Amino acid sequence: MSRLGALTRVSFKSHFGLAIMWRRLFREKKDRWIIPILAISFIGILPLLFGMVIFIQGAYHMLKQLEMERAILDMGIAVGQAVILLFGVYYVIGALYFSRDMEMLIPLPFRPSEIMISKFAVIVVSEYLTVAFIILPIIITYGILARSGAGYWINATIVYLVMPVIPLALIAVPVVAMMRIINISRKKDLLIIFGSIGMLAAVLGFQFLMQRVASRNISTEDVTAFLSSPNSLPARVRASFPPVVWGANAIYGGFSRTGLFYLGLLLGTSAAVFGALVILSEKFFYGGVVGLNEIAMRKRQLTGDELSRQISSGRRGVTAIFVREWRIMNRTPVFLLNGVIMVILFPLLLLFLMPSGTIPFAAIPALGKTAPSVLIAALFMTICSCVNGVSSSAFSREGAQFSISKVIPVAPREQTAAKFLHSYLMGALGIIAASVVIAIRIHPKAVNLMAALGLALTASALLTAVGMIIDLARPLLDWTNPQKAIKQNLNVLLAMLADIGIITFAFFSAMILLMMPLAPAAVIGGLFIEFAVLAALGYWALLKFAEKRYREIEM
Image (cartoon, rainbow, N blue to C red; front, side):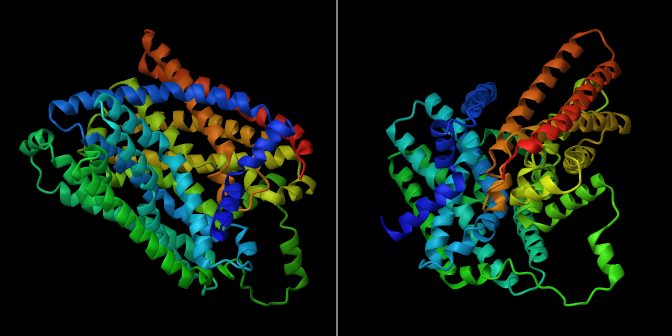
């Protein structure tokens, strides 16, 4: 095996940990409870996948009447590319610059480009898993409905495999250059955070500008022409990110001359941007990594009173742990970008990327007319509160420092209560951001917006408790990359599946109440009481579980 192949193999083992999981499950026969949970979770996802297939099927037949059915491929690939482009900033920075194994790899006889390639391969494979539920249902459903031949399926496979390369390389190139400059400064963490936010703002601004230009001077008569033209929708997508249309044309064209041309164009462009990244990494990669974790401190002699205040803040246990959680989250760029920024970013994507006249917003009735519209708003707020993974990584984020939490003179109940408060406030931040988006786009009555806000805050408390229970049951404490504590943490996935189950339960509860001869206020009040009781039970169960589990966790 070549040197690069061996390094890539080790990177995959370190990142995904499949070999460790296989050994624990089938050799050591530990954590076998994960198998039935994963099976149940997969069964729970099937209705969601079924709903997506039904939606895609309906859109296909509707667009086929207008000879626009191929636009499904354009939009599907566009959404997948947007997800990679927007959230890949945090992923690239965490994998390339905050992995603990970098301290071991740099002294070894590897070239910077070899380390970059191995890390980039891991990121690409991880993005396959990220966009699988977005792209694969569209490609498979479209291929079956269109009765596509072998050329479609082969090209679709190739396009799916190379799809993350261009957006990730376009992210990695400025990241490598940015980190080389940032590493010169003493305020490295602060510059990383602001630099990443700046890059993200540039991406959002570019997308927003493209939509403004594309939608300029559109009248009511133009809407009919837009829906009846077979090329208008792909043209809109092409204007923002051409590789989207290259991939769609390659899949749609199959083995035809057009299909092979666009497939070659996509592969050639992917190879070119990847080659540029490899060349850039040879010059600047090590310069951005070496010394990144060093801390510049001012030498100053402390007086006795100052030393006393530094050692003992005089805070109560819950307050002290909460402050510690807050500082760990804010001082670690990967945690801050994937946690705090995410809850604000998710609703803002709809605010900036969807003009107020587009179908998603126009289809939502004005709040205040019916109870279902209030419940829809509460559902949107609740989803925005649980997309960050903060609660389901509350204990995992401590890593090896959890051994300190076991011996400090603060009871597990108090530590867990502080972590709950921190995680809940992060979810509440997402709810507030979502409420701002609703207020701007839909202009609801204040009383109905407050009703939706109250429901979402109560539901978020339940989801926070459940996420923390899942993470406390099997905390991931031996991570080498802080990115792994959130984005590659199985607990985050399990919590997300649990959230889907709870939201589904809430949906059926709401349907039952709506079918009863009850006033809208009674329906909303009934759901509020239901979530309040479940949240209280979840919080009580979390504290009881913490008393037992803290003693059992081995470091």
